[in-house]
Length: 290
Image 1 (cartoon, rainbow, N blue to C red):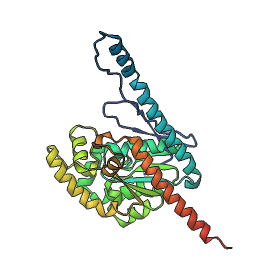
Image 2 (image 1 turned 60 degrees about the vertical axis):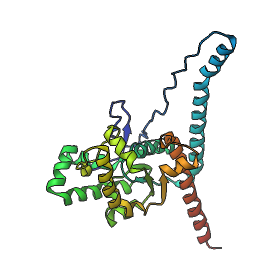
Image 3 (image 1 turned 90 degrees about the horizontal axis):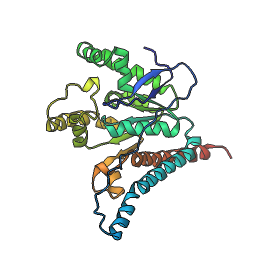
Image 4 (image 1 turned 60 degrees about the horizontal axis):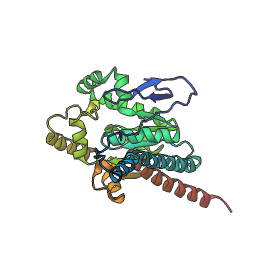
C-alpha cells in the first residue's frame, strides 16, 4: 500500500464528507472549510411607529456585527498561527479521541490555518482495503491484517511533515502506534459520549470500519461508545494535550456545549501548541554550550 503526498478537497454533499485525492508533487493544496452561518432570519416587528422602525433597523444590522466578530476571531487565529509556525517547523499534528464532527472540523481548520495537508487515517485504511464494506470484511476474516494496515498507514503518515491527521481509535491501542504518534504533536479531542451518540443517530458522522458493530438507539450508542471510549482511554491520555469540549464551554462561559465553535476549539489548540513549542525552545537553548 502506497501513500503519497496528497490533499483533501471539500465537496458540498449531504454527508459533508471529504474525498481524498492523490497528487504527485509539490502543489500545496489545503482543505477549505466554510464556517459561515445563516443569520438571515430576522424578527417580525410591527412598523407602526418611528421607534419600532428604528428598532428594526438596529436588529437588521445584527448579522453584520456577528460576522465582524467571526472575522475578528478568524484573523486572531491566523495571527496566532503565524507566530507559532516558525518554531513549529512543519511538525505534524495528530488528533485522537472518538470520532465526532468537532474532531474532524477541528482537523480541517487546523490544516487550513497552518497550510498543512489533512488526512483521516481510518479513511486511508478503508481506501486501501477497497472501501468500507471491504474493510469490514477484512476485519471479520483477518483482524490482525487490518490492524497491520492501520500501523502501515500511521508509519507512512508519521514519516511526513506538515500534516494534520485525524487518527482512528486503532492508533491508540498498541505501543507501536502510540510511538508513531510521538513523531508529531498529539491532541486528545475529548467530546462527551452523549454528544457523539447524538451525532451518530442524526447521521452527522459515520462510524469507521472497526466500529460498525455499534448500533441501536441513542441510549444504546452511549453504552457501546462507553466501551469503545474506555478501551482507548489509556492511549488517549498519552496525548501531549487535551482539548475538552466541556472545559472549553465552561471557560468561555457558555451555557450549552453547542455554543462552542470550531474556531473556539482551534484557538485552544493553538494555545496548547504554543506552550509546547515554548518549552521545547527553552530546553534547546538550555542545552547549548556556553
